[in-house]
Length: 386
Image 1 (tube, rainbow, N blue to C red):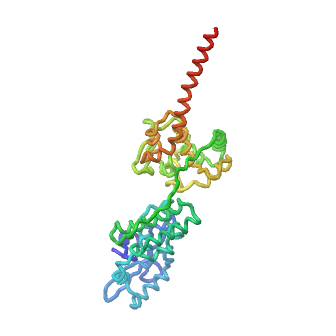
Image 2 (image 1 turned 135 degrees about the vertical axis):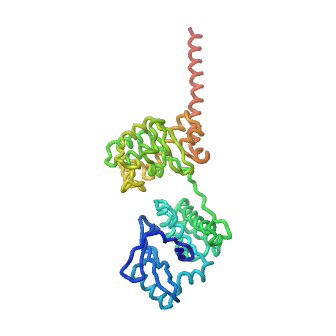
Image 3 (image 1 turned 30 degrees about the horizontal axis):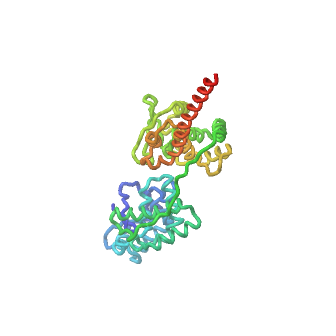
């Protein structure tokens, strides 16, 4: 059965149907939009002019739909007081709004934290102003005003995320041939995203001491792994036991930020850490509820950061990834190409933020030449005096 809602197709023929106490009203369970878990999607069945019609009434959360409301809609359509979805679609099939695109876009996205965050951004910053509009009706002034007004209250990075989401929604519709795009390019704010976080030796020592004694041991082990390997938070969330090859000595990184799956070496610290973690017959190294992939650990890692007395703006996991890269670059023993591979950066431009640490190491090495020559000159002078 192909059903259209707001001009977009929603297949439900293979889903299990559940009856309600209202005749001609049933529901299926589908992925919730804008929140974790599932929600009920209500459908109605009725006859018009001898033809059986089956169509969607609405979603439990998005449309605040209930069996009683669905029954009311059914009654209106049976009596001919309200047009069917097909009739409404035929009337407005050329009108696809940003709201329509958002519903379909979030339905098709993975039900993870990033999708949840994007759905919140949409509701807070885009829905009221842009939701009722068609992409082709937007003008540059609309997005310019949004950018300027948000920059008064939010960081450039946040504003960029909001505008990028709007751009993705429009492109989503254009790529599927259901709407026209904007007649202009959405301008993004300039973002200084070259932030590298570092810790002094004293701060690192304090952190390691807390990590050893904290009751939040899952968070502690994840912080150690970030420090030992430079892995991203999302990569650790998705890390499975099957991704760790103790025999060959590598860790398989699934779908890193750069896109293509990669491998990184399994150093001795990481090997020891992994061997200390109990498998407990679960698929993931750091499982979430029910043994599935974890989606958050922010509260626990922040508690460790605060107990160690680290700065509030130090990001516990991503900051340790930066520290890992900084330590390697400043050692003077790792070139930028190798560092890029270890960090699984898609582009070398991302790795170049650590280049100044390498330059400092090279400067220190160059100074050693002066020290050696100075020592040699002092020995020569002593011989001449004798």
